[in-house]
Length: 103
Image (cartoon, rainbow, N blue to C red):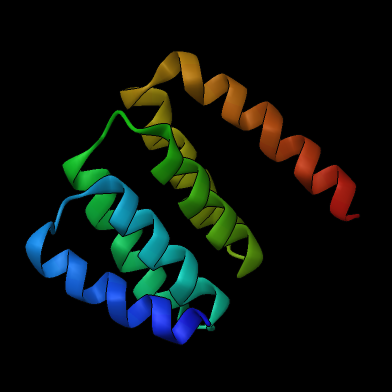
């Protein structure tokens, strides 16, 4: 049902292009469907519009790690360090736990 949801979310984004929930849901659907480039674009748009929303940093970092792009993930974490330093530390710990559990 992700393709149907994605159609709805793309329509919603026309009326609310910077809505964080729409952008996150759209990115999640795109990622599930294997459209990682579209997922990345939605997450980057979200970061531009909402630089203090930690969800965009978390999801973009997770996307890069799934793509085996650790350098890109690290760059996102560095951005988080600048924009949301208190939350960035917690994000790093959470991602380290995820990585350990995947091994």
